[in-house]
Image (cartoon, rainbow, N blue to C red):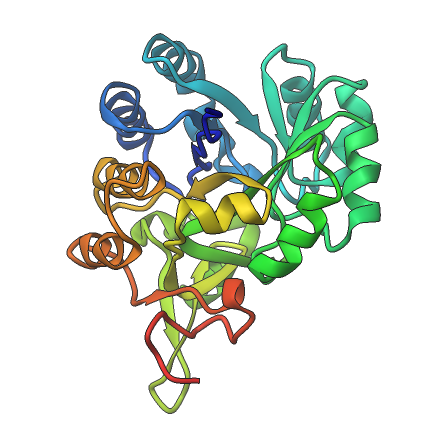
Length: 303
């Protein structure tokens, strides 16, 4: 009797500007308690934040690996300066697995294995094969794709692990402008790192009071929180081998535990959604994109 493959859980990089001590405490707890297989570390959103966290990564990586986690080094999604591109090249020269969030980093990886993050546009099989031929071993597609669309690509690229962004505010776009600086009447170059005031991003409503988006420095995110809770059978049928959880200030150990129970068949999608709804999430739960609906749609909501 064949054993069905286990669907792995990944903890993605922290998108927000958390103080170094908060980051270190977060990853210590993840190392010791979180039911995840792989953990991403590194600054992805804003290169100006890097000096605040660079010094903690060696200790964090050592602690995570000692806790049995596979560590992935995540690169900046929009490197703009010589210093930032040098930092990307340094990450890519490491022996550990690296997540590439900007295609210009691929040559620096020199044919070694890497992960393609959700900031890179992978919308069809040809693009997936292009990256696989250059060393991609995992692809986390853009968040607006449906499960059926991702499954179609995954089934035609069986040598690559496809990973779905299952939990967290959805990363939608990056800008050359800093929304937090502008909001506080500051210039981007002298932003005073005001994004630190909003550790889950700052919710943005329309003039009419409708929940709309969230901002995180130069990043635009969904206002709501993706909470995709599929059955493991649904994922296997689509050729999906991994789910990704994006860190927030909510109890991520509890989030990981809920998803591990779901993927192991120990609890249903409905009970998983209920467990997530009991946590202190920064927004309502949605899963529209993956079901081919508008992103703000949620399970049980009428179309």
